Length: 193
Length: 86
Image (cartoon, rainbow over all chains, first blue to last red; front, top):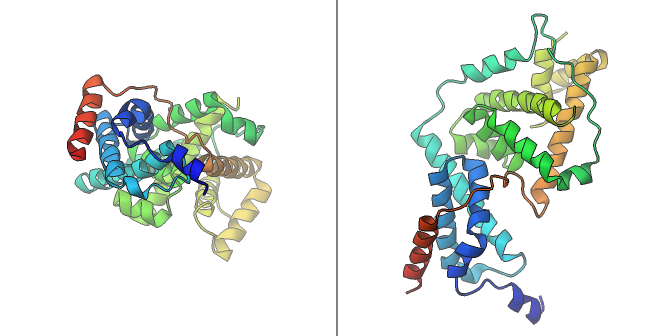
């Protein structure tokens, strides 16, 4: 690491600037995952304080914003853990019924799926698509959504998701199954039509 | 022979871990005969891949809320940071 890039990428030692520079970005990141403005706000505040206390651990290998996001991800998982410990998942019948809704009496899919034609690298950059994706997620049950977000968006290990959400692996699989079927249908209706 | 609902469960399970030989054969047979489920399997694995790539990109997903921290919240955070500085 050259002296120059270290100088330019070291976080500003005036962390007051963090709030104005990154506050809203971190808040939207947290809100997109936690869905609760108070929790999201707290996660941002905890992140900035933790960052401030470990300012010496910033190596300059990533940007300041990426570094803060890394800390925020841990705080978000802490919030999930706390929320699900306080309010454990007791019943996933609703999610099991939701899965049934996608199939007719002969257990075939009600809506026959289409072929999704897309260019992956273009879709990755397409803000509109990710907006649609985020919208589709809001239509899931909160349990299915949280399971899917931790597993597929945050790419946590399955066991870690079960621990964080305080659920059994069989319930976790039901939630993922529901989430995937519903997202598939929603994306097909709203994007890949 | 498994039905479409069971097949979709195995498609989802397959994204989590390798299936047992028995389950894998059941799913393969079903997908061979059922175009709809084969399509679902394709869609779900491409969504999975897309999200893996997105997770590594500079712009993480789920940031399009366009919300703002309230001025009070911002002030509170600044005060907190100041307090910790001293």
